[in-house]
Amino acid sequence: MRVIAGSARSLPLKTPSGLEVRPTTDRIKETLFNMLAPYIPGSRFLDLFSGSGAIGIEALSRGAASAVFVEKDPRALSCIRENLAFTHLSDRGEVIAADVFDALRKLSSFPGEPFTVVFMDPPYRKDLEKDVLLSMKDLPYVTRDTVFIAEAALDTDLSWIPDSGYFLMKQKKYKTNQHLWLRKN
Image (tube, rainbow, N blue to C red; front, top):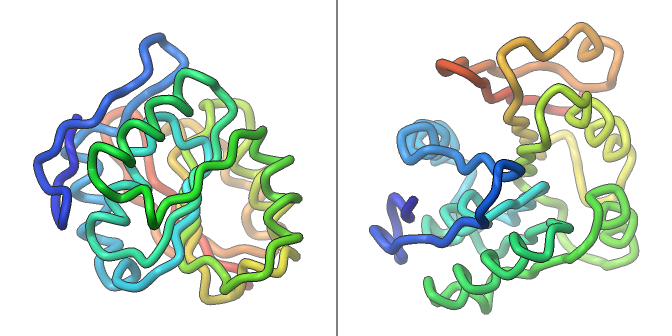
């Protein structure tokens, strides 16, 4: 796995070992960031369930002003910190070692600009996409302009979206997973 483009282009990234982490492939990451291109320059990026930090690091490499990485696994946290240091992007990345829901509450107490992009790649088939989005709906650091992207299994139930306070902007399907693009109503 490597950084695809930007200031850290072609630099390899470490990934934690084990089956709990599913690194986004370079091909899917490239497709995602081609679609995200208008939102990235100068953005504030939130990477939830960060794993190796590859998505947030890609955003920083491509010109995001800052990125917050949220992860609770100690091995993954170590990878994120090492990857930020190796890519020389540590000064623009903040790592929060916590459960996502605890981190979202903590972020509410820190003043700052709203996030431009919120990316999440939670464990599949646990309805965490829904739970996270519902818990973020009224938080001060997300607005109607914030773009939410959830990586999910292809068979994820999306019937909850119309009644959630969000609408589905785009849905990009791949062989085994998909990216859901949402915004607040």
